[in-house]
Structure formats: structure tokens, C-alpha cells
Image (tube, rainbow, N blue to C red; front, side, top):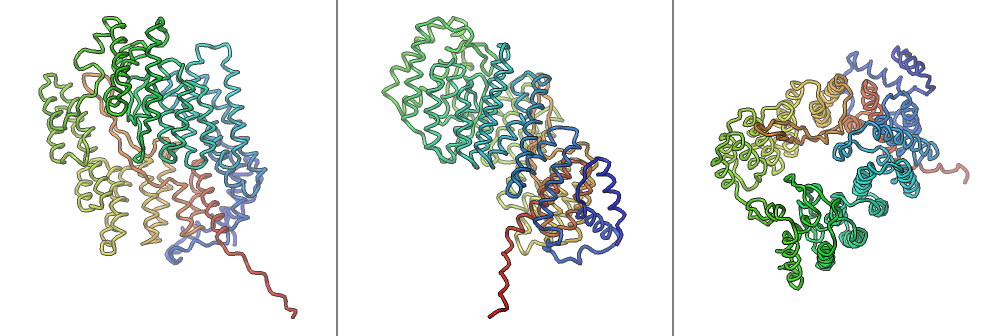
Length: 631
């Protein structure tokens, strides 16, 4: 049988001067042509993913081809992503080739970071939003060879140190960036390689303390609090004599604080639900804090140890220490009463040692650091309505709405509050956000009828499409609701297509395609085609940088900034969608993946198919040896 598509693909790859075997790709194109010619996809029984193409040898070949094809990528980050994914998959079969791919990825990442260093933003927060690809590679290598990953880390840090020599003005910024990235990587490795996580976290102690240290401690405590407590004691020893802008980051963990306001950056933390406070660690920190307080009183202030509080006030480090003492006092009174007298004395001495302006700033009503009682939602709205300025009034109501608990505050009450906002655009967006959040909560609670009513009030088609997908998932679990579940799923597809070519619409189509495999194989394949076509219309489709969250910003009138209204809408990306579809029909999945025009999405989807084949091959029982005919 002749397949014209085959020669076209061969010529395309030949033009790229990459000699690879394409027999399986050519066959995939032929399959696509047959389907397009009218052969019903439903003729293949649902769940039949077996294919002569799906075997270990072809899967390994597919992986190696994707490694070769990365040479045609123009941008380093997508190339690195494919290289480390392919190298990880290839490692059990051809370790030398996999190691070479990891090495290429690390070299690319090193060059990429050099460019970012030269032209990247100078803001720490903005730089942290740009992942350092070297750490991405190191985390991937850790899974296969932790000793090698440690060598790469040491090499990276040594090169960074050498590059910063002679540039003292950049050292502080770079060191903070390094500390954050080391601890972020350590956090991500806790679940898979706790030893490697410890190695990175321990290395971070050579750099300035940041809020990432507390996040790591809480993350580790969720898995192993004893180890987290031990690491905290180690960190306390490392930072006990460091400037207060570093030392005060250690105050949150022993007291299970969810936020800090007297550190260089405001930090909010998620405390593990099973967290147990250790009084021994509290005592160690408070005793050291009192020593630091006495030292600050006895020696001249270090003018370099100054930083702004969340309100923008530039204060000396000792003033931030005072804020810490004030915040700690109620807990010390309850758990460590023997230290209360020393804390109270230190607080009073530090307060009188500060300038009159600083004292006034810390003690004036409404601005002092104290544990203010929480006000109710109704009290916040009532107080906001007493404000004369319309913009400020709208702002206070919006802040109350955004912080209102979905469990405690009635929907009608929040809607009434939103109706009091004069800005029509803000009012509309807040209502959309509210209905979306409540609909999501209703789905989680399996209140699907209520979820449908709430979803109908959501204005955005992408949001409605997502909600209908989630409702359909829940309804499919109930035998008596199968017909209605199909209707809701059809609505989700209709809404997604209305949204046009967007990442969130594509996620909905991919997820819906996967759901249809259980009820209508033909529709599933047709919808996968629609999803691929939608993705092909998106310029540089990126399914990862948004963290599956759509943000609709509304301008704050009368002040700078915006309200970032977040809509978390998780769904399948091409890689995960093709992996799932391969279980149903590998041949169709292979042909559809070849239709993706974006190189990254195509490569990752093909690797997902290869991974599916390798897993299938591992699950196959070994053939029993044939018995000899001899007696």
C-alpha cells in the first residue's frame, strides 16, 4: 500500500539533515488518511489500545528521535524540556545516551542563565518568576543519579561565585536569588528524594535566609516533622549571628505562624494540618532573640540592617526585632511564662532607645504591631460604608469580599455587599469570581444541581466550560445520571469552542475528549482532532507557566494596582491527554500527535505515547519457554 504522506515527512526531516527511521510515523499518517477517508473509528472496541507499533523497541526509537529533533528547536527552554523528559525515559534502556542528553540540557541551561543574568530584570520577585533551567535539569538528574546531581550543583554554584567576583553590588541580589532557588528545588524534591532535598537545603544555609526557608521547613514537616525540627535547629545555628533582616525569618516556624510582617518581604505560609509545636524550639529561638535584643542595645546600630515594613516605612533592624517581641508576647505568656519578664524588659528598653519618630510610628493607633481581633464580614462592610470616598469605599468592600470564607458567609450576603460597589466593572468581575468559586465548592461537595445553577451565572465562557466539565465528571459517577452527564459534557464542548483558540479552551477540549472515550469513541477522536486544531491556532502554546490559573485583573480606581481575580481551571495538557488516549487507541493517538505544529507540544506528546508503550511492555508477562520435544 502506498502512503503519499510518508514521502512528505521523510523530505521534511531530510531537509533538517537528521537521518532517522520513520516507518512508524509513516504508518501513523496512513492511519490518519484512512480515518479521514471515512472509516468509522467506532469500529474499534472502546479500550482497545493495543497496536503492533506499540512495543519497547519502537518506543525507545521514538525517544531517541525526539532527542535528535531538539536540534531543530530555536529556543533553549523548550529544547531543555524535551531533552530532560527524553533522557529520564531513556535512562533504563540506554544510560549512556540518556546521560549525554542530560549533559546537553545542562549546558544549554547554563548558557540560557548567562543570558538572563545579562538582560534579565533586576527585581528579585521578577527574576524568581523566570525559572533557572539549571535547577530544572538538576532536579531531573537527581531522580536518576543523585551523586551526579550534587556534582552539577556544586559546579553551578562555583561558576556563579567566580562570575560575581569583583562585583560586590550584585552579590546581595545574586545570593538571595540562589538561596530562593536552592530551597525551591529542595521543596520540590521532598516527596521523591528527601536526601537530595536535604543536600540542597543545607547548601542554602551558606546564603542569606529568606521566606523560602520557612516554606521548606513546613513542607518537610508535612512529611517528617522530626527531620524538619532538626533542620530548624541547624538553621538557627547558621543564622544566629546574621543581620536581623535574615535572623527574623526564623521566628515563624517554632510558633506555627502563617505569616510574617516584620521581615524584608511579607510572607504567607501554609502550616501542615498535623503540625505539632515544639516548645524546645520556641525556647531556643526566644532565648536567642533576647540575646540579640541585648546586643542591639549595647552596640551602635548597623545602618545597613534597615528595610521597609509592609506599609513602606524604612525602619532599622532593631525596630523590626521590637515588632517580633510584641507579636510573640501573647504566645510567650501562654507557653513560656518564665521568659515573659525578660521579653517585656527587652521590649521596653528597645522602644525607648528608638527615635521619637520611630516610636510614634510603631505606637500610633491603627499602625502598631499587635494581635488585633478579627472583624466579621458584616462588620467590615458596615465600616466600609461609613467611608466618604467612593473609591476607597469600593476598595474596602472588594477586599472584604475577596477574603470572605465560602463556608461561613452566605452567598446572598456577599452578593448584597457586591451590589454596594459603585464601579460597575469591578462589581461584574467580583460576581463572576464569586459564582465561580461557589460553583467549584458545590462540585467538590457533590451538590451538582446547585453547581449547575451557579455555573449558569458565570459570565466567562472558559469558566463555564470548565465548570461543566467538572459537573459532568461528577454526574458520570452516578448510574442514573448518565444521560444528563452527557448533556452537560456537550455544553462544556460548546462553551469551549465559543471561547476560541485559548489554552483554557484547549484544556477543556482535551479533557472532554478523554471523557468521551468511555461513552462515544467516535466523538472522542473527533474532539481530539478539534483540540489539536485549536492548539495549532495558538502562537507558542504554553500549558505550564500559568499554573492552570486564569487571572482577570481589575484596576483599582483612585490608587495604584489591580485586583487579581484568580480562576483555577485545571485540565489535561497535550502530553497527558495523548497518554490517556493511547490506552484507548494508540494508532489514532500517534497520528493525531504528528498533526501538532508546535515542536514542543508534538515532542512531549510523542514521548507520552512512548512512555505508554514502555509501561505496557513492562506489564506484559514474560513468555514461557517452550518445552523440548525430547522425552
